[in-house]
Image (tube, rainbow, N blue to C red):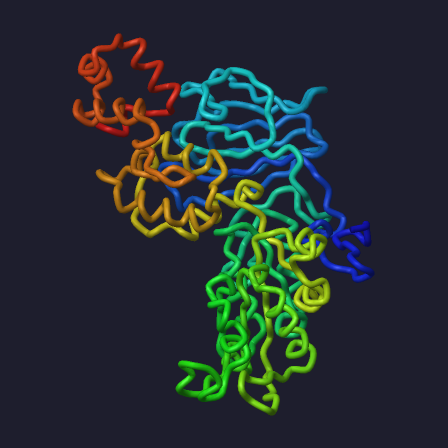
Length: 450
């Protein structure tokens, strides 16, 4: 494989798209600050603030507002747990630093109380009940405003809002060609590939149905019959004629999910129907025309599959006339506030500190699907109007209590004693100072259990 144009690769003389390397033309990696959420009002909107050219960001309590000059930015957040002069971000020679300004309720960085600390990319800042995310080198398009409130963020496609500029650029580009150029949707498991395909179908305005087929689930000996259709009696068990997926989606859209799992023979057989818009059913003599917009999706590196001969370069070129790259959730944590508000089951709940950290503080191994599942499980398990960390499954799967017995025992003691930390410490037989240190380290707020 040799280098081609930005965002492309050349394989066996053919130019193939490679994802979102050039998805946001002119984008530059710049420091940014995102207001993600408030634990006591999960529906409170967030915001995005560019830090390039600034020397200082002041953070404090207020009715909400932004004041900016050439060197300073002041953010006032409507959070009663914040002090008027709570904290600030300061740019120094070695990067951005967070400093507490003598606040009443303190400042936490990635779960730990701090008075001063250097910020790293992806740092979660907790001020009162407000959760903020620092990104050191997130891509920024030239047209991105210095400050953007969530309410002013446009939909780049129906149901899709994002602070992630490469993803926004991909959607804007594809919105202009929906229904015409074939699209390869790329992204890890759970990143929303089928949801994206349905959105593209809606954008296309095509009147026919949306049909999705999981290529990995097709029986190997029936792939041709499933995709291209078959005549009655064409093979054992074929009691009646069927049109196949390509013609079943006539007038609409067909999604070939996990397209990389198709065996070589099926890959070769797809080439002519895609080129000619007609397909010969198994057992049939004449090709039947179809008008279907074909989308494909994969969670693997198809260029690498082409290079090792596992995927046909000519099929790749036909399926990937354009690409939509859905990054893993860990790479677009700036969208967590947007996603949580979109996926929230609707039950009004306050987040305990540990729950806020669990939701907003790290990557989700199962991406958007895992986040949605965790919110659904957590909200169903929550009691007394509070969503606690122990109610949530871990990002990787199991329940929080199952993987963190220390947290579970502390929370159980607090619940048994109605949030009385002194009594809970006595119940566990540990010194009060030790108990408080453990609570602080694990981000557990005793007040949430009163």
